[in-house]
Length: 173
Image 1 (cartoon, one colour):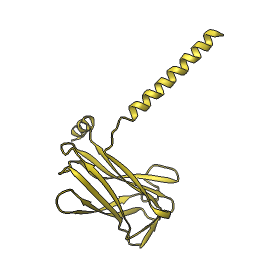
Image 2 (cartoon, helix red, strand yellow):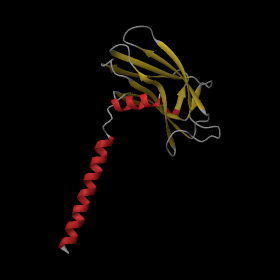
Image 3 (cartoon, helix red, strand yellow):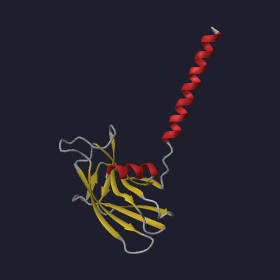
Image 4 (cartoon, one colour):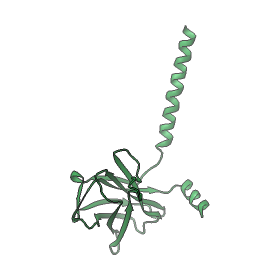
């Protein structure tokens, strides 16, 4: 009985160590910035802007900048148009209009989730910020309705591209 108990205990320790290793390996991605802002009552008025303010120190690295959208089943469109203003530490404000596809032609949500669907929209891939300092992204919905219902959160993620990512990108070309 003692031997079986020792084997069971050793097996439990091995499983715990394996899970700890998996968790540590999966959490090694360092983000420069990640922020989500809730949209009050899942209703986004046309004149409401959401601001994302962050600092960039290293202008020699390349980054991926993504817009994160979380919508529920109450959102009644296939896509979402957003207007994005980018204010750099130096220079003029740049403006961009981005179409975000949230559902396919049959109404199936493209994002992952069950009742809340998260979509990742690339804004800048392999991007070098030109100046160190504070950047501000202002995001406003650009749909024709005065308010849209069903978008619960909006987020911005800035992730440095690692050497492994850069190698993968060069292999794809």
